[in-house]
Amino acid sequence: MRIFLYEFITGGGLLADPDPFPASLLAEGLAMLTALAADLAAIPHVQVAVMRDHRVTQSRTADQRRGTRTPLAVTRDQSVAFADTTPAVHSHLVHDPGQEPEIFERLVCASDAAILIAPEFDGHLQMRAAQAEQVGIQLLSPGSHTIALCADKHRTARHLAAHDVPVPPGRLIEPGQPLPPDFTYPAVLKPVDGAGSLGVRRIESPDDWNQQSHRDRDRPHRLERFQPGLPASVAVLCGPGDPLPLPACRQRLSEEGQFRYLGGSLPLSDDLDRRARRLATRAVATLGDVRGYIGVDLVLGDVPDGAADVVIEINPRLTTSYVGLRAATDHNLAEAMLAAIAGRPPALSFPGLPVQFDADGTIHASFP
Image 1 (cartoon, rainbow, N blue to C red):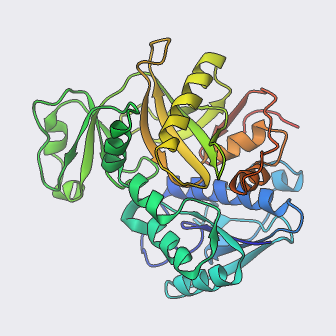
Image 2 (image 1 turned 60 degrees about the horizontal axis):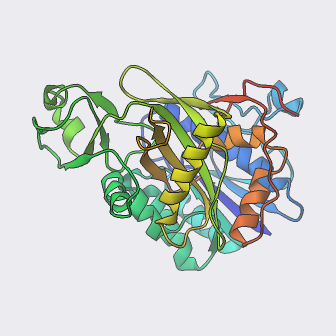
């Protein structure tokens, strides 16, 4: 089986941008790509094709040579180290912006299936999913319809609320519109199509936002009530059968009011894990016919029965929690994902060993 694994940041999606790689998105994109590519390539009879920005160097670290799962990091010259860790992974270099869509289309047409990872902002993920669907390739990740819903955070919140899934109360803030003085503060303000916590901030009063530059205010935002509690995420494997929620991960977020994603850890206590999985499954069930890996971000409140738990957003793609979950299981997580998509019961178990991971994929726990 030939699988095209596309990751936007490392695959040439930013070649037309004169600015350096966004550090947070680059680290997470690289972590997801290297982990998933290695797991897919370990499945018999699977060949993996990836696109690689020519600024991504091809090298191996000592950790990789020892066989650990620690991804490669950004090098001092701002290039990125990426290894073809197995002969079953084939890199296709992208040297200029004009090549990126051409190589994408060629690999889509030459593959049996595709997995797409890209930020939701500016329609990047949705456009590439629509392009793959037009060709007729099997998508092993969510389709354009699901992406269109989940990429709009305000629309997602309204959709979930309409299906009785709890979300923080919120409002849509149009470009240039001041924040309402009658809203409950502190609050969280975020671009409706953001990704990777970019542009997210805690707002103590309307003045915190109304004094910002017009550049920061030229796109729609969602203003929602700040929800105290434990930030968590649940990855859900989807296919023709019932959604399969994986163990919940605690999210580590920065404390300066921008909610930067720093990594996560697992397992949670049995009670918190049960509450998180139950709520994530309810959220994903509202999406209809979905397939592949979907990430649900939650806040678990301080009410023991879960009455204060809320869904923050749904990520219609692989998330960085993949690197922690693959370290916590004794099975191939990619193989389990493919089984779920095919409607087969995945072979998957989690022994319960503690795992902590950073946003760049570094693992801070020992595992087999």
